Image: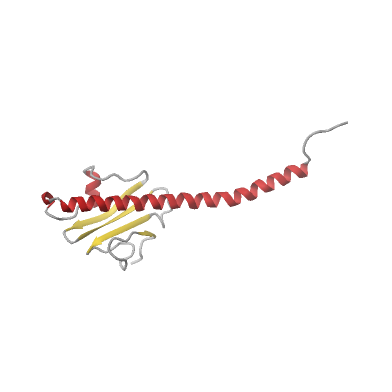
Amino acid sequence: MNKKGFTLIELLIVVVIIGILAAIAIPRFSQTRERAFVSSMQSDLRNLQTIQEQFYADPANEYTYAVPSALVTDALFATSSGVSVVAGDGNQSGWFATVEHAGMPDDENQCAIAIGEADNPLDATVASGVIVCGATEEA
C-alpha cells in the first residue's frame, strides 16, 4: 500500500517555520509603515515652508507669515492623507507649525518646524528650519 501525504511532524515543522517568519516580518512591516508616516509629515512641513515663503514674499500680505491652519482653510496648502495641522502661528518675525498623523501612536505622532524667531514646540533648542519629530516636549 503506497500512501502519499505529509506526516504530523512535517506539518508541525512547517507551522513553526511560518510562525518564526511572521514574528520577524510583522515588526519590520510596522516600522516601515511608521517611517512612511514620518516621511509624509516631514514632506508636508517642507511643502508648508515653501508656501509660507511665497506668502511672505507677496506684498499684498504685508510681508508677514500666515497662520498655517489658515493656509489649509484657504486651500493654499493641502496635507497628505492622514496628516493634519494641529498648531501653528505666524507673524512678521517668523512662524511655526505642528502636524500629526492619525496612523501613529499618540506619543510619537507629531512633527514640528519653526522659522525665524519662532520656537519649535517639540524642541526649542534646534535651529530655525529644522524639523523635529517625536513626543511633545514636557513642560
